[in-house]
Amino acid sequence: MSEERRCEELSTTDETLTLDQLVERGRAIGATLPEGTVLALHGELGAGKTTLVRAICEGLGVYDLGEVTSPTFALLHEYDSARGLVLHADLYRLRSPGELEQLGWHELLHRAAAVMVEWPERGGEMIPPDAVPLQLAHLPGSHDVRRMCIR
Ligand SMILES: Nc1ncnc2c1ncn2[C@@H]1O[C@H](COP(=O)(O)OP(=O)(O)O)[C@@H](O)[C@H]1O
Ligand SMILES: [Mg+2]
Image (cartoon, rainbow, N blue to C red; front, side, top):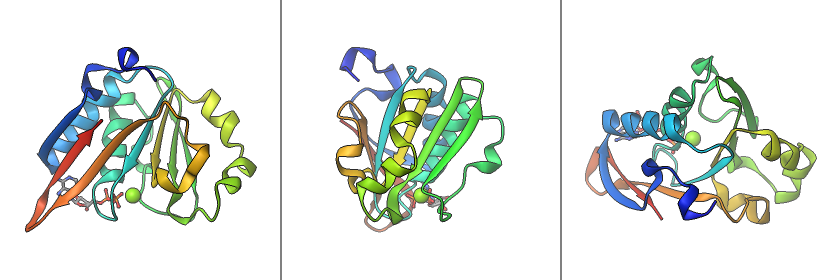
């Protein structure tokens, strides 16, 4: 996605957020996300990727937020929302990018109103070049804040 098609909430940023602030940011991102945006969510285990995905889903109007969960053995989760199909990929257990192809990845990407990918680096060339990279990280010595960078 070109810089111009990004919403305000996805402008380049580097901020430190409490859990409440991160959830608030996620809801705002979801509420203003342009159709077809792919978000590449980088960050180690426990960085807050799934927490952010859930908040973005809330902003997007996903009907059953209970479906938006942390790792199961499914690589892809499909949610129904006010905006249409929301695709949530967790590629932690992906063995090779080709595995995604077999799951109908490209067709799903094409259909989805919004796509969020945890562990995008494991998806290699399957991640569209216009995906918006968002990085979450722990801060040394602090359990309850996270650094969020959008490039
Ligand atoms: N500021 C914060 N932002 C996001 N998560 C936080 C924050 N502070 C504490 N947490 C906790 O850290 C955990 C993040 O887990 P999760 O979202 O599943 O991470 P990931 O998907 O990156 O592995 C959750 O239990 C969440 O409540
Ligand atoms: Mg996760």
